Image (cartoon, rainbow, N blue to C red; front, side, top):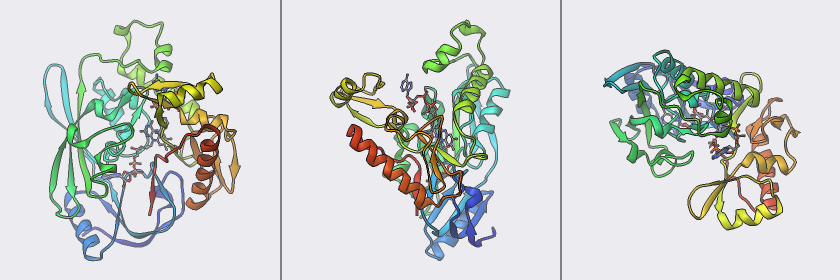
Length: 340
Ligand code: FAD
Ligand code: NAP
């Protein structure tokens, strides 16, 4: 039976370092412990907060339920052929350690997703993405346990309904499954993705056949380290808002007022704007209030240098949303999940 720790401060288990107490906390390291933790929550009628690295959550208050920390470990090659390898990875594995593991074997696929904090099990939840690659590009299937029945279910890529920082687990199946493993399809042959402008530029003087996945990973890590605060130094959850997708006609009107506004096509009628740019030009970059702040090098990242509460951080987020809505008529939606 795993240990259920009562009245547990989650400060060290969320990268915004918000002090908030869970009624119970449990660390789950295998499937038997997961079953027992789910039974405990059902018997005690406790809501669940499935926790990975805590790098995409905001604790607005104490959590009146069970914080179930997925810490299962393991990586298994389940199939391979001359060109590809299928790797099944336990939910509790650290994401960047998985990227490093794949690089050690010279597998292609995860290099653009280097240095994203958090766990493997959380990666499908918002279909993590960076530098032109999303989880769905390397995804084969996942196994998740149905919280009500305790039974494992396999989800194909189609069943996950991946979208831009989105999946079925944020929508129709929200709070219904605990992801226990993810199977990735990686490549043995070169598959560099240098579509993202900053990477295209960085490798512009190199022949494609001279580039290996380690080179791309190192470049991504170096760019990220220059721009993003390390949560261990300055608490944060990465991008606080999703990039808004708006009607092309509205974006073109905005571009007349702000000629430097960047517009990225989504489909014929819709475009994506960079939320960080909107927040920056609304004057928020470097702003500090009540211990919370807006990062000086990337205005999309809200930080918690002064030990602010979740409520203070969310109040700042709300002010930013209002200001962006007033200035541009664009609504920003928070990316991290807010609890309880
Ligand atoms: P948590 O914060 O622990 O959980 C997030 C959500 O997933 C919660 O709702 C939780 O209940 C649920 N969840 C977690 N594990 C499971 C599971 N096993 N089963 C079911 N539900 C689960 N994101 C990007 O997409 N791209 C980036 O480039 C990126 N860069 C970042 C940079 C920084 C500095 C930071 C701090 C964050 C960044 N993020 C980025 C956000 C974050 O790292 C990812 O969303 C990551 O996948 C969250 O993983 P986690 O384990 O910390 O999830
Ligand atoms: P950036 O390169 O300064 O670009 C700003 C924004 O413009 C990004 O959000 C990106 O959208 C968009 N963009 C730029 N070039 C694009 C293109 N050619 N096509 C489509 N969209 C384009 O961004 P950054 O803040 O340094 O982040 C770099 C990458 O890491 C981005 O992919 C970003 O999503 C990712 N990241 C994510 C988080 C998070 O918490 N979610 C945190 C840090 C970094 P996209 O976001 O859609 O790529």
